Image 1 (cartoon, rainbow, N blue to C red):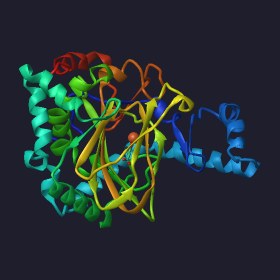
Image 2 (cartoon, helix red, strand yellow):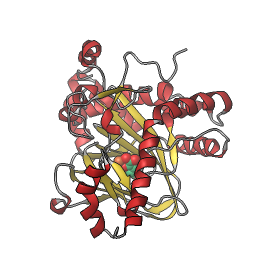
Image 3 (cartoon, helix red, strand yellow):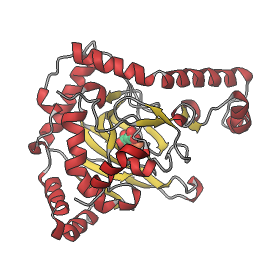
Image 4 (spheres, helix red, strand yellow):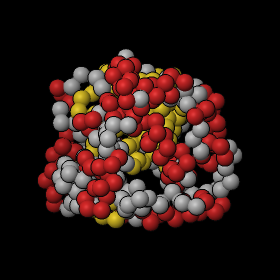
Length: 352
Ligand SMILES: O=C(O)CCC(=O)C(=O)O
Ligand SMILES: [Fe+2]
């Protein structure tokens, strides 16, 4: 029986994972930390302007960064340990949600995928997709049936309440679930990406890696009045992202999209989009976005960061350099060694 960590080839992380994009929550600032000297010269003045005036405050920041670097250095080992413990001790409430069935998917979504898969009908499929454009190159369409969303949330709440160990999605989200650790990759997320999302992304984002998305990182984020309320403006470590609203009841918490990350915020006008339960938003990972605070209720979203090794092997989207590869767990951050996988990648990088 293959496990969630068996893949056709090995995946890697870029070494910048340790030093880049460290989020300073109180200042809503992403920073790079290579050495204290570099950090002081890059950020001391900026941080002062943002209200970090005393030596003590600066020292606190350095301590937080050290903690985050340590968390990142041990992340892979700890994540593999958590996955093994979860497998051994956790009994799911709804086993069926771990295996994707067509009946979980909204009929409109399946229809769109069918159009895109059918070679002669590609153009019609594309037109259908274009009609779902909610902001420049951001597409909104129904993805799941409501009953599936409810079952998935119930399963995740059951997991939350269990004694099993939990990792968190990323530095900006404190609540939510890493789906690979819970065992969702092989039976659910990989088939969703390969069979249903890739036909759409091939047509919509051929320039952004959409033709050959060969791995992913999937997680669920959760916002609650007593927990995280919003998500700061950011870009994803992904070529293409799917973000599906699962529920429950909530008010506000709209997503907003700016421009690609190369464009300064001062030159960016943002578009706000309402997120509706069962619907997904598909966008390029480098398209900057954030989530506004909810004002009541609880908001759960399934987020799939899809990666194209062929694209990111040339340029790491997080440090903008040729990646320097470090061995990782499972899909890691989606990089591959150029040799060895290229043949297989060429086979999968066609419109289908
Ligand atoms: O909460 C949301 O809808 C946004 C989540 C997101 O952008 C992310 O996790 O990368
Ligand atoms: Fe995001």
